[in-house]
Image (tube, rainbow, N blue to C red; front, top):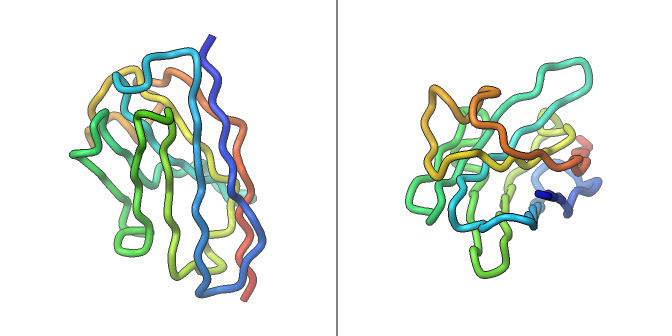
Length: 128
């Protein structure tokens, strides 16, 4: 059984940084791309970043490009999201998704395609 757990969410002030972690178990982690999503109150869940199986491909939506960095440590079955220059608009529940494939493509990873497993989320709140 695949299990996914996010951590690292917190309450911070605008301009500060946070690093989220997502650890997956019950699978051969190296085979799978990983994606980060977020959902703010009253809004749809938004895909914000994807990293392929070996970290060579890293994709970001415009809203986080240049501020967030995704990385992974396959030896630890963990993917990270370094979030810098945080804004109040970044306030959301952040989720990690295991894709059923090892690659990230714009027509699939932000959608419900290739969903293998989701975590339960970690809350990030940015105060102004």
